[in-house]
Amino acid sequence: MAERVQFELVTPERLLLSEMVEMVVIPGSEGNFGVLPGHAPFISSIRPGVIDVYEGRAVTRRIFVVSGIAEVTPERCTVLADRALSPDELDRGTIQAELQTVEGNLPSLREQVARASGSDRDTLLVELHQLEHRQSVLQAELQAISEIAR
Image: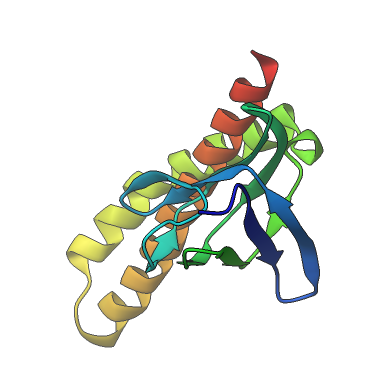
């Protein structure tokens, strides 16, 4: 078994990272999973969270991802992320303000969905899903900021 695994992080804009690493931990939709050399092949969707890259048994790089897909083989881990950025680029104040607005809008939107019918209801359900997804992304961004502050 090799001592390293090839890790690639790709966004729609470009290849962000391609390097041999000791281990990478990905925020999968069913929970975080670590990838070491020789890992069993699988594919997982990714939830908003932080990818940790390890060298010398320590985290050397952290990357916040909004969503995407990870493909793992025994030799490689490829993450196709919708959006990725350094957690240092996240601004707590801006995120908290947006989260407060989102959470303030959710109850009335849920009430509108409950009262609506037909295509109006369908449209509102799409809007509700998008707002709930934005809420989960903002919460994950705040969690990433908190983890870095430790």
